[in-house]
Each structure stands twice: as structure tokens, then as C-alpha cells.
Image 1 (spheres, rainbow, N blue to C red):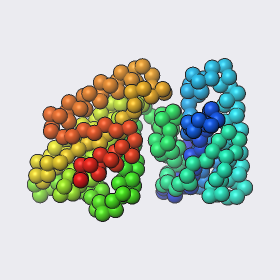
Image 2 (cartoon, one colour):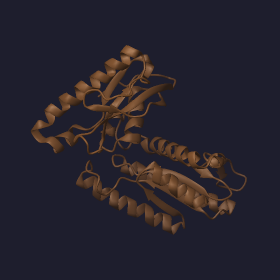
Image 3 (cartoon, rainbow, N blue to C red):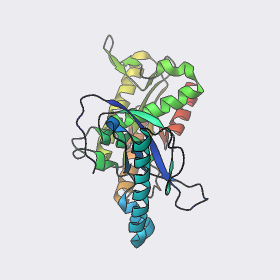
Length: 283
């Protein structure tokens, strides 16, 4: 586990995701890790879980880990040599760099959580969380990142919708404004994530947002309301059987509660799908 640095301010951190193509020529890539420059220190971290590699390669997984570790070290050394990631555009070792990005982060772990959530379904995200499911307010953080990704895609297609994202609506007559994922005279939306590791907290987050949507619709008279929820695919290879069953049950529970409140629930598997639902609802 990486050291979680204590910073009172959030830094704008440059980073790139690093991908591996296990079978050359297939075009199928797995996000292995990240090269980044948190606090001016150029490093590379592996995110893919050990159990995934063991499942794929068995006894040979040790050799795979060694190959990936060597490749990560190459990227870290290259970033340190040029004092940046902009020039790291070509493959080194077994890894290929993804697009250069910048993300606000308060610690290395904060950055790695963001990278894993944006690019990897095979990362051991819980390694970068402090505490257990009962005391970690992860869903709000994850939902915010999901909503930002959706917003970027939507505005890339229709910049005129910018005003609606993050706007507020009232839950009581004369009450304070409550921020929604999207609020306009046409529609009210919230965004959430059903996280496989923090499922109980994810369900609580979704329930709270359904209630806010219902109340805002009642007060404003706006009838188009929706909860756009990012959920893992049922056949995700990194999910255990217990996780899979809990996800199925929790998704069904949220769907029933949304139906009871007459709110549309759109379960999506990516920010791109979420953006499509936003555009369809507003249109």
C-alpha cells in the first residue's frame, strides 16, 4: 500500500494511465497502473489486483508481475528524467501510456482512487480507502467523479447545457437551494455509483438522492426526474460471487424504490452511456 501523504490543500497532479495488451495485436488493453507527479515526485504505481493476475496466469503470474513492475519503473524513471509526463507518448517495456491528464488530489491515494475509478474495473480500489465500509463516505466522492465525467462528455456535444450541471433546487417551499447533478426547467437529475466494494453505503446514497429528486419534483413541478446510476456489468471478471449476488439484489431494490417514487432509473456501465441518457432525457 502506498503512503497516504497528509496535505491540507489539493494539488493539481499530472498523470497518465498505463495500459497493457496481454495478447499483442488484439487491441484488448488492461489498465495496469499510473505514472504521476504528485507533489513534484515522479512515480508509477500498479493498480491491477494480484488475484486478477493469478487467475489469468496461475503460477506464471509472478513473471507477469515482474514484467509489469519493470515497465512501471521505466515510466517512473523517464518521467523523473524529463520532469514531466507530456513527453511520455510511446510504449516502454510492456506498457503503453494513455492520455495525459491533470486531477486535483490531496494525496497519492486520492489520485490513485480517481485513476482506478476512471480507467480500471480490475483495480483493488479498497486498498486506497481508509477504514471500512461503515465509516468511509466513499459513494459521494465516487458519484462526484462519475458526474464530472458525464458532464465533460455532455458539454462536448452540447455546451449550452453547462448551466444546468451542479445547479440547485429547493426541497421545501422557501427552503435553501440543494445542489443536484443537473437541474433545469426541463429536467432534474442526480448521479450515483453502485460500488461493488461499498455497496451498503452506495445504496444509502442512491436512496437519499431518490428522495431529493422526488421532493424537488414535487416543489418545482418538473416531472422529468432521473437517477443515472453507474453499475458494474454482471459479467465483470473481478467480481466475486457474493459481490455479484449483492449487486443484483441492491440494484433491484433501488429500481423498485425509483418506480415507487415515479423516478426514472437509468443503470449505465460508463460515463459515455450516462451522457447519452442525459442528452436523451433533455432532448
